Each structure stands twice: as C-alpha cells, then as structure tokens.
Image (cartoon, rainbow, N blue to C red; front, side):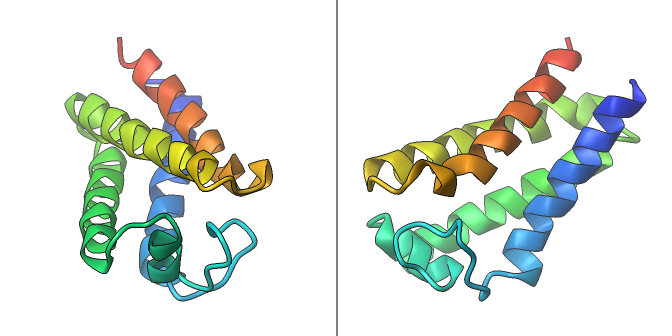
Length: 122
C-alpha cells in the first residue's frame, strides 16, 4: 500500500469523524438548504432525525473501518466502498434539492478520494 493511499485514508477517515463527531452542530456553507446543523440538513433533504442518526452511525463506523484498514488491508474495500456509496447519496440529495453546486463539493471530493482508494485495493 502506497503512502498516498494511507494519506487518503487518514484524510477521509478523520474528516468524516470531524463532521459527525466534532462539528455536527456547526453551521457551514456546505450544509444542505439553509441548515445550521446536521439534523437541519437532513430535514432540508426531507429525511427524518432517525435517518440522520442511522447515516451518522454508518459513516462513523465506515470511517473507523477505513482508518483500521491502514493496518488491516482486508478492511479497505468495506470501509471505502461503503463510504463511497453514502457520499454518492449525499451528492445526489444536494442535487435533488437544487443546492448550489459548491454545497456538494465536499461530498463529491470525498467520493472521488474513496473511488481512488477502492481502485487501489484491486
């Protein structure tokens, strides 16, 4: 495994953990609609608070799996492909509610990074 893939895993994993564990209440310019926190963002997408918690649990779990995959390479595909699928969903819901394109940029960037990691695991 190359150093570039390790760096991508670290960036992806810690960034996802940051969004969901450190800054879920923080308003950012990338939140969907006019949301001020992550719960409001899911409401802007038409999703429930429960769905937000489910997605949060999945993203946190997959981010941790991706980080563990630095030492246990057989976890790479599970963590990275799982995150890629969820991030594709993020991009699609930004488009669905007609957010400006810049709001889907972080999800799209992390989707691309996960695709690179998945591709490198073959």
